Length: 475
Image 1: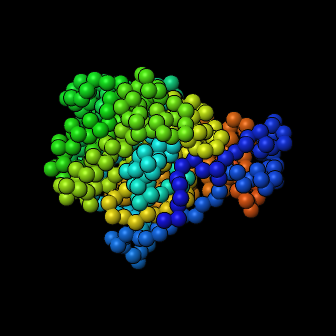
Image 2: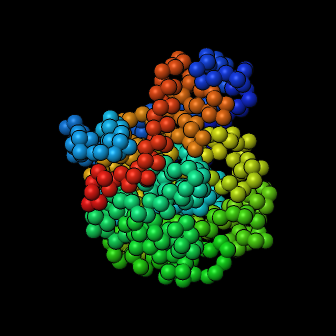
Image 3: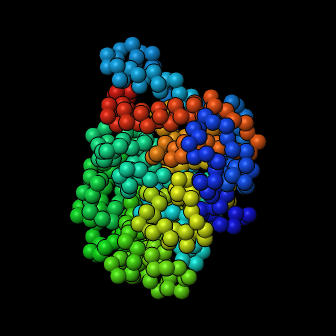
């Protein structure tokens, strides 16, 4: 494959202080025409093109339908007395649904193992230290412009975004608050409705971030330390040990969907106080990095061994070829000093966009690599998987988009910066840079600002109003 190394690529490196000659210029000012400045921005990307299409992707003959459900918004509006809910009905009825595509139903009927990995990022991908993750990141879907923004409640919000395709509400524990809401589109609930075995595991306290309430509400039988998961009392706990203790609980119960929230990658990154880093110290001692960077890789090695254990176990049972793996981080490794991040990246990492550039693994044994250059983020994981599994879902009611749809991409960040196929906006400096060959478009900028603002606004309202329950009646 032509991709040499995924990760924090210099193609998106931005030297912010040189982007514009006047730092006070607003986003509606004329852009700087300096070619060198524009070359450092995220580039325009084509629709994803398979290098080798899987044999089971059907040839498109008829016009493809849309991922939307038969919702009578006119009736909902007419019969609603609450102004906030009426406004929500009007908003969602105005959203264009995404169209189904050649990847719709690609993984229908497959098992699914979804791992949200503590502080996992492209920095953890190393051919020698994490060979399993390295291989999976190159053999499956290769997302060259995947971003994993950080949110206010770090790990919990990172999980919430990936699992619900909703943006978290500022100042609250959104995942905890969602535990009393109807969440029909989570992978757990959708696959449970398809008669899957659905289990979730976490190798730390079962009450942490109120996961004992949020995760059962997503459709999982939830087990963690304190309510059934028996593992050694270390800090952090071992991802490998969690896999060793749980694999036999589901491997004979196909079809299954298993969700893991890991912990071995947790800070602090040193060899004195971090059990996992110390456990795997020997494997990283020879590396030319400082202690923090080496300790981070040592922690991520535990994740690599855990995933390898699952793959080996599934292969022995003959279930590997029917199992899809998804691995994403909850957030970038913010516990790693900036110098350590720069060390592992091999260059100075820009901190408004590139810091959040990461790796999303979607892998199935035997598949050929499919390279995707379209900007995407953790917000897009759920709708993408929903399309892969052929679910009957409504794309209008999610804030992310199926990555393989024809809809233009939108990556948004906690500070309301954004990246599209045409431009990127840095909210810190209030500046926009368009890609090479594109003219300044003030109306386009305004429209993306409105779109970003609406996604934050209506994500909060979905949470506060239990909106899915209103629309579907808690079916």
